[in-house]
Amino acid sequence: MISLITATYNREKLLKKLYESLCVQTVKKFEWIVIDDGSIDKTDELINSFKLDNIIDITYLKKTNGGKHTAMNIGVEIAKYAYVFFIDSDDFLPNDSIEKIINYIDKVSAREDYSEISGVCGLIADFQGNLIGTKYSENLCCSYIDYRYKYHIKGDKAEIFKREVLLEYKFPVIEKEKFCPEALVWNRISDKYKMYFFNEVIYYREYLEGGLSDRSVEIRKKAPISTLLYYKELYLNKNLNWYYRIRAYINYMRFKFIS
Image (cartoon, rainbow, N blue to C red; front, side, top):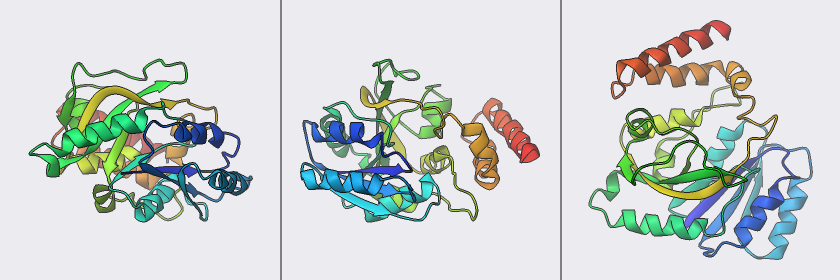
């Protein structure tokens, strides 16, 4: 039913917690695809030991280092199920996460506008159970742009996309750049599709020192084309009001200057 994709780089010491959370899922209708973005630790040995446990369906593929987004593209290409859920290597899932996701997928599948929906999306909490960002007053079915800029919902969320949508909207791969903002693709998807947002925690996240989130400004400076493309498409987006378009333009000029 669901392909879980983890793009990882030198996270050998952190992957076990995620693996253990997958092994105790109340519903095991999923595969776990691990795309190793050129790690130089013993990630390969660790994943092979997980495979020997024969508890969950695991696919492991190692590639030349090219950035998380390139690993995500490959994961989508080799996924065998209709829905895709990206999970970072230093995070983990509540034991009923997959069960909840499947229940909401079934609910959305019965809607008349199902073909217009790109997937479902739940909430994220930190490792202590504290909600990250804001929650919804009720379940929503709207575009990613509206959910961010019309309903003003803040913080990272856990998106589960239809695989066919992610094949339609791949992450752009730009030579010599190893970062691409995920929101660039999510915004593009929202031009055509809505998403069903539900009000339950399905993901636990920790922001590690030295991780992508911790070094976001530094990383964006090293990927100027992707970053400028994100801000350019945002300030040209006519579905946004002028306040957010002007803010995006200011950020576009700021990164253009410092890059």
